[in-house]
Amino acid sequence: MKKSMKIFLGVAGVAALLIACFVSLSIYAEKEINTPKFELPEMEVQQAAELPATKEAAFDYVSSLYSACTAADDIELSQHTDVHFTEGEKVTPFSADDNEVLSRVLENAQGAVSGLYSVDENVLMTKVQNVPSLSFTKADVTEFTATKGYVDENGEEIDDGFYYITLTLNPSCMNTKAMLDSEIRKSAEKELASMLSVKSLDIAPTGFTVSFKISYADNLLTWVEIKRNVMLKASVDFTDAYKALSESTAALEIPFEAVQSIDLFHYGLRFTERQMAVEKKDMKALPLEVRVDSETTKDEFKMTYTVSEDGILEIDEDGVMTVLNTKKEPVTVTATLEYDGHTYTDKLIVYATELEVKTDEPAGN
Image (cartoon, rainbow, N blue to C red; front, side, top):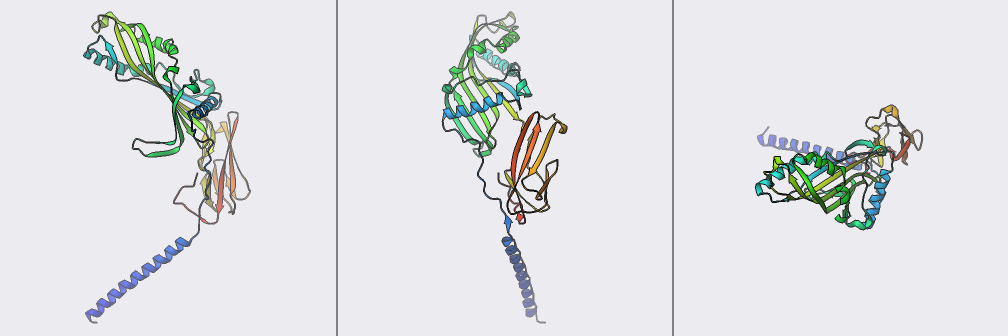
């Protein structure tokens, strides 16, 4: 066979192979494109409340949620307070070197002072010794912000299912007399007794904000941060051991910030998806979040599941769903939790379909 003929047949063979591949690929693509897949229908986003548009509405919204929490017997509270002696203290008649030493002393004292405040870890609200109160009124609110999600440090908008509401308050509404008369002040002075004695003390409020984090899917308040900023103004006499600092009464002005964080854990349950699609013979765990005390055993609560129509789904005691049959219309799964004298329920819409379920994106909430 001539060389030119061999080349021709070789090229023809490669071309035939490529054509076969393209034909197979097109047939496969056409089959995939034309294969019907089940897509979940659009659902209206269920929101228990809209974001407030005015500072008055913001106050009413968050204060009602907080009041409901403090009166509840199925919420656990955790709280702690961080103390900061912020930069900018002024002390006379100290030298610059003395002021630098004092700044380091204050920095080291922050943890000790923080420990003087109440600390609770996962305590049932009804058993908390000192439930924090929102000691301000609607008239005290000067500004507010209300957003769905938040903007992170990179400037990106993050929506993680929460409302974030912050109230800025008139600092003068802060109860400085209560601070001056508090056990915390007395404890601090006692700890400092070996170093100095306080001749006089005044507290000038400089800033007051309260922030709230709310799960908008079920309208639950999950976190509160109360931030108070004041200027501590004191006249002190140092003991003989520290007379080198000052031979006369020292006048101190120290910026002070106390940040109280309150976490709220609600008992109950909720489906993390509002609807889902499954195929016959599928076996899947229900997208369910159950919230009980971390030390609770399985014998101390009861979970039950019901389906709006028999013969479609079977759900075992562990919340694992088996699809028995398909149906054009969806069925509703109701989960019920009985715990500590309370009953909680939530519902999930399930489409048991004969069509292939799309898996390239999560089920809509």
